[in-house]
Image (spheres, rainbow, N blue to C red):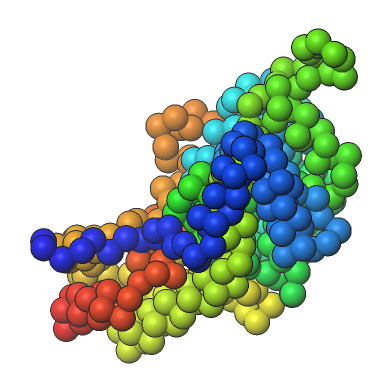
Length: 379
Ligand SMILES: *Cc1c(COP(=O)(O)O)cnc(C)c1O
């Protein structure tokens, strides 16, 4: 194992990040506010859609927490959440003392199934409560079924919290992901398509909503010369240093999208002739995926018993990271007691699916090493 480790997705600096950090030091804006925070928010607003309002925060998880607060979620409420996702989508429901209601995926986008979603809403209403919000996720950068999910949400007048943590740079019918929800969220964690080392953002439709989010994110201080509080506050604002990294990263975002899509194209080509292996690909031209992570499913019946574990372990031997898909939340011990609606789509994806090295910084040599392992396993 003398070779360098090939990661699933690692930070990839563009070059100007340190210049922005230096600027923050030179002007002594070493605080959770400052010109880079404002500048980074403006960069994101221009990138997404000039009609959006973006608040930079300490993490994507913090953005989900504040998003749910803005949507009025309180103790005892029910919140619907896509089961197949990272736990950070669902944990903030518990922070608020609300109850998560998990919903299965569909096979096309691997995201929340509109049919199971409607069934879940109807069943919860029958039991006496209309869910307060729907958390829908663009898994691995592939947009969820935007129109079908919106139609169900509107029919029952339930707002959507759009978890776009993995989908900055993705779009649907030309509109950027992050702008479809009543509230959207982004993440700039170290493994995401761009990073601020750690960070996130909330995307709102009005300036007033953004202001309210920032109010909660900065300890909920009422207007007064002394410290006066009439709400529970949080310390969730982004640091000006991190925002400086973000400004540098925004300059290379589109390049990163291009390179991640190129990695996806590489996998499509390598696995094309291998029966039983399907590289996860957006269902139509309407869906533009950033392919934050390339992923595949393996049907062992068609591969003479080769499973996703066979491939994962072969990668591991060569110091190459790969990982099973997100384990659905309704199968997680911490969430096992909560209701789940759907069949076994998410569960089957988890059993057969694997995420592949996808970084925008993979070298030709890295790609050759990856290809060699694939060729070995599938001979
Ligand atoms: C990364 C991620 C988050 C959390 O973002 P952080 O910035 O790491 O807190 C939430 N949801 C999904 C789907 C993610 O992948």
